[in-house]
Length: 388
Image (cartoon, rainbow, N blue to C red; front, side):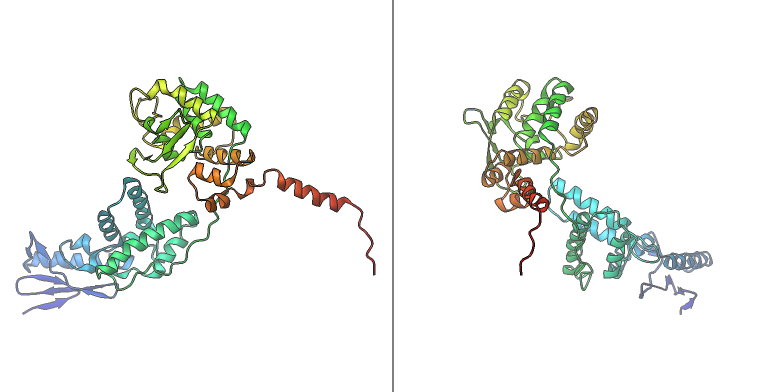
């Protein structure tokens, strides 16, 4: 015989709780060391206190089955955070990609997703709704549209697996609209700024930073490409460098960002900087550029920015821009010199279409100023009377 009293069911040899979470009835049996808890007076008193505590946690939106009943085996106990961590663990991805996914998971874990101020990561997976995702996004207006779209993409992929595993009947992220954002225009350094930075780099250390900065300005390599450049791929007789690998967060990648190797033609400035660099690293290692503090590969772009780049720009009083903008500076320098867009695109590893979209502002050189001057001249000329 058994009885029920305020959410506590007393059975012959056990105690079972009875409560509802998000519309789902839960009836877990209390256990001790994996065995049913006997219905002694002391245990019944504990059970009543526990069911009151659970009721309060349900009311405030902070209750999860796994916290109170980790071995319940009930799929409704699985939280959004727990599932996304499971999904991430099943992904075979590179370290840099995993780091960006982890950033997205932290966002969804802490995002407030309803009027009860619940964190989305603590929501039971089966109860997650489309509106929860929209609310979480709306509550973070400080996050850029591009970043929101990246985070939504990660969440969509993670929940798609839950649908395949039949933990969800539908993906609540489907039909979440893309956040609007405008891709920022390139912000290159002027020729005067470039030369000032190169000169300052020559004074900043014993030579390696100077060589890397000048090579960067006059090859337009991506950050991962210049950090991963190897001496075996630099051919001084032909004046070229084969760009076929990259170094991302200290991890070697035997391919570029676009997975297409290319040959970069080295101008005299880049060749001179690389010739100077030979005495530092050509004999001792495979990489052209190393962190001079440790005579080792650069671990990240951030280390270069923090220790050298930011300080140089601050000393010069030059408005801060990322080192990546040295690439934009080279692209615009080529265009202003009248070089063909097709050649420029090949140098940078772009398709011609992407190159034209990115650097359209500089394609005409001074032609835009000339055309506007013609309009201004016409505006200043006397208007002719209209003849009927």
